[in-house]
Image (spheres, rainbow, N blue to C red):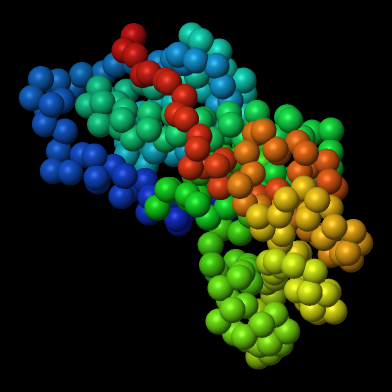
Length: 287
């Protein structure tokens, strides 16, 4: 994932920020309007309440700036930093009403992204002695996918496709609906030629026969081995014999992750990186 991830996907993030703020503020922050003077200026600091890997700081800065460009954001850390209990992450200064209006959206994003980055880092560390890379999936929170994938990258993982539009992934249902692997891949080859698009093509192979049928197709970028046991995975990798990059997925957790990585598979994709991550506890406190 490129360093300028926000700029690369700026349109999507701006849509997300506007939607998130509208969802929370609605017709107005009546709590603050009722008791905070319009001229009031304040400073608040973000404090951490548990250890983890920080993620979402750059996005938080964009949220503050988009809502109220006059707010002064001062970071004390960077995305990817290890944080401990009581760490000061940033300060925000300016109109009190603006700080309060953006507080919850910023906290939600930082807590969620930091939780994902922390889990990704923990699991990546377990397999760092191998050449295997940890991938995320499309099992993400609706309308929050770009941020969650950004968090995976910050935590040391590698991003899979963002959606249905930036890679072709032929899975079991595609194969069954088309009447078999060879027929499916012939149709895919025709589609690529006619459309002129240049996309990675990942193909799920359930058994040795499907692997044999897939290998001759040069446009296939990677072979996906889903729900394979360790012996089945080793057998499949032996058959593939480094002719295509490989990816393992399905029922992979912290208990079997290392054993799967040690088979020599190139990638492991885990939906749990996003759906099983627990938020990091953070708070924004007035100074």
